[in-house]
Image 1 (cartoon, rainbow, N blue to C red):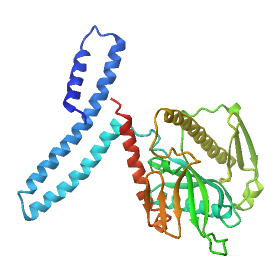
Image 2 (tube, rainbow, N blue to C red; image 1 turned 180 degrees about the vertical axis):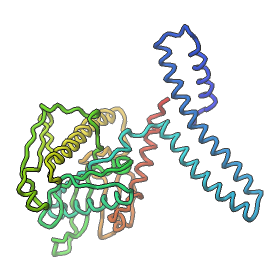
Image 3 (spheres, helix red, strand yellow; image 1 turned 60 degrees about the vertical axis):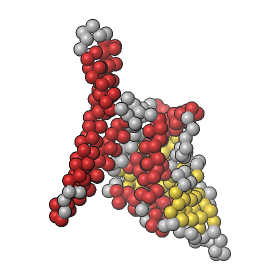
Image 4 (cartoon, helix red, strand yellow; image 1 turned 135 degrees about the horizontal axis):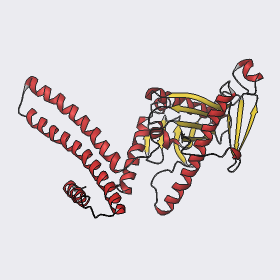
Length: 353
């Protein structure tokens, strides 16, 4: 628990030091940054404090009233409690800074793993699940690239999900998703286990990742699949190879070669950014053991058991007996506990003061 009086006293001391004309420039800049940080955190705290005092006053007054006045105080108390949660979250986000990518849009990549055609069908199920969840959040989903199977599943599907805080809610979906069910192709009624790999990549800007054009090999080819004669007769599909890393990105969803190239470059930037992020996090884990999945694509994070209508997240030990509802895109009971865990981890790392 922070000692707010001590922090205010520290800020007053720093402000007094800053009035000293003999203070050297380096020390002055250091103290100014410290003062700005303390001033901001105290401002957030004061907002929380104001709401807490107003709430205490309203609760005190309500206990003295009856009838309509008491009901009015009940309404005010409900509003103040909601405001207190909001102000407290603002303070915590400032003290324990969240992932800088949280508010970004993402590229969703889903690939079938072990299980053949059944894995491809489940990849399609997951894509529908995430698309439905995006709709409830008011996000936009657009296809970047896909490769289908004979039975209507996906060997691979890449989509762009545009909206606010998409990465915040979906970033922990990266990893291996395991499904246990009787496949449509199974005549004996036996339960099979298949896997699908999901990757969530935050959209990045040119300033986040700089790519040397000389490091790229760009090929065009004739797109296949849906799209009619125009798609099949025009070399509009794009394949970009990043030579230093060997990363390959393709895009054929748009009829315009220019638009496909732009989308493919965005995906490549996101993958390069993720590569560097994973490298940094791996170094951090050497010094500090994590208690939850790292988001590594090789890590099994969740099991979907159809016969028991059960879904289990193995990282936070959450099991829900409503798989049918989850597959319709109702994901908050799985995602919000992960967001809460992240806040605890941020707190464990300590405050930035």
